[in-house]
Amino acid sequence: MTARDTPQGAPRDAARGNGISVTRELEPHDWSNEETAAYEAAIEAVNGAVGAHSARIAAEEAKDAPDPAVIEAARAAQGRLAKERERLCSADREQIAEA
Image (cartoon, one colour):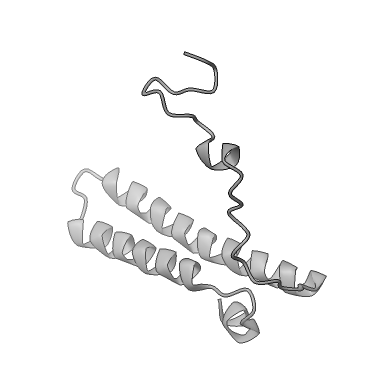
């Protein structure tokens, strides 16, 4: 077994080793520094909200009698936020500002 092989025998870096570029299908997009910063800030804002729900879940689970409805609502909110984060489009200035 070589260092590049996994125990199953498949190369670890198969995509890298076969010459296929994972970015070749992407459209060119020019970003200004402001657009880049706004997009990153939107991602971080959503991540912060997900983290706040994680803290809420942990606090509820730490109680002697946790309320399952509180935990479920926080997990549902995390799911909605994750979907929102996935749908963020770097070229959609209005959406980024909203986030």
